[in-house]
Length: 292
Image 1 (cartoon, rainbow, N blue to C red):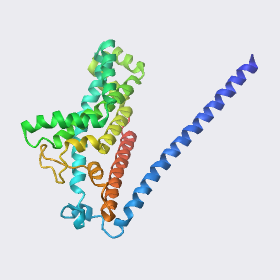
Image 2 (cartoon, rainbow, N blue to C red):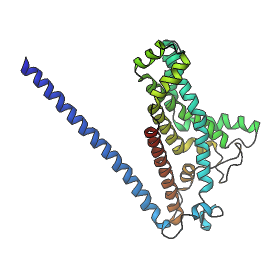
Image 3 (cartoon, rainbow, N blue to C red):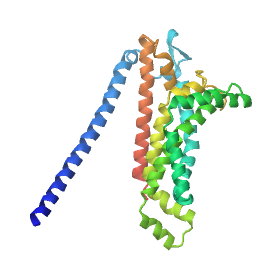
Image 4 (cartoon, one colour):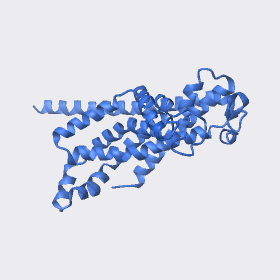
């Protein structure tokens, strides 16, 4: 019997070591893939970076590649406006959805609501774009032409990232130890006091991770935004102005781009990757400096 217990203990320790090694290898592979993508983008961008100053991508008069004008700033601002607007709408809605499922809804209603959100998460982006093009854009056009606009992009992206925020926030809140909530009840806190003072702070890291994932998808979304944004290279002066994002610009022009034009499109991809890396750094800083 003692021999059997030692064998089980040895086997468990071996499995733990192998599992830990597999996780380390997976993390290393992920880092190498990211490094490879970064090097690939730099390599493809290098032909134009050798003879065009970086500031020209933000100070040229316009985006006219055939005339050697490579101003990416309107598309950078279009990307940031659309993704930031979507996050401003989706973050409170996603967290509220998670709180509703855990603290307010009946078990049956919570399960049904979660299934609907999961179904929404599985809808392809082109379907969102098609619905936006045929339904949302005409509705906005009746309110304020032309319809295809920054507002349409924000609303479509909000629908697309809402499931990510809701489901990750739900998972983070479910993982909060029950002892925390029971202690809050024992102290006489109201339901909202328990949510605001205990549940949300304890689930903060998971919620921030969900926001990071949603932000990455919003910045990188292509097809849906391409179909509803209007694709005009300009700085949006209102919610109803057409815009073009960096991803949409790559999708529209890569098929026929050559020479410096093609290389500048890879510079656009490099900018997108740097934006995502910046988001990751901000999230890591937030996690280290804001403790429960």
